[in-house]
Amino acid sequence: MVLQKALLGGGCFWCLDAVFREVNGVTSVVSGYAGGARPNPTYEQICTGATGHAEVVELTFDGDLISFRELLGIFFAIHDPTTLNRQGNDIGTQYRSVIFYGDAEQEEIAREVVAALESGRIFAAPVVTEISPAPVFWPAEAYHQNYFALHPAQGYCQIVIAPKLAKFRQKFLR
Image (cartoon, rainbow, N blue to C red):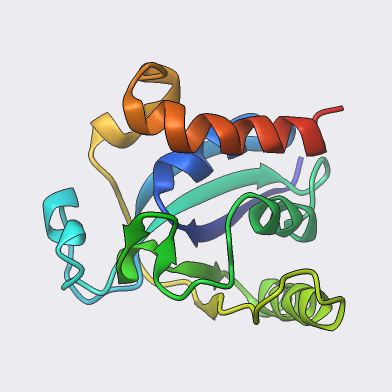
C-alpha cells in the first residue's frame, strides 16, 4: 500500500466529499479549507469570501489502487472547471476550482491533465482551474464531515449533491 495525499477544491466541499468517499482506493476524505491567509478559519469566515481560502477535500489514497491522474479524471467529471470562482449557485473565491499539488509529480500530472482537456476541447470554455503548491490544510468543523451521508434529505443534498453522485456512479462505478 502506497498512501498519498491529494488536495482538491471544486465548489462546495460536501459534493466532493460525497463522491470521493465512494472511490475505490480512497482511504480517507476530510473536508476543509486551504489557500488563504487566515489561520484556523471557521466556516462562517470562509463564507464571507474574505479569507482567501477555498473549500477543499483532503484525500488520502492508495496509489496502488488508484492514481492521482485517475482522481483528477473524476474531479473534472464532477464539477465545472470553466467557471471562475463559482459552481452553480455557489459563488465566491471559496468555491473556486483548484488543485493544490503536494510535489513536482502531482504538479506535472495536473498540468498534463488540464492541457489534455484543453487540447481535446472537452469543455466549451477554457479551464480556469488553479494549480498551486499545497498550502496548510485546515479541517472543517465536524458537522461538515460526511455531510451528504448524514443529511441525505436536506434540500441542498437532494438538489445539488445527489445528481453529482448519480453522475459519478453512472460514469465510474459500472
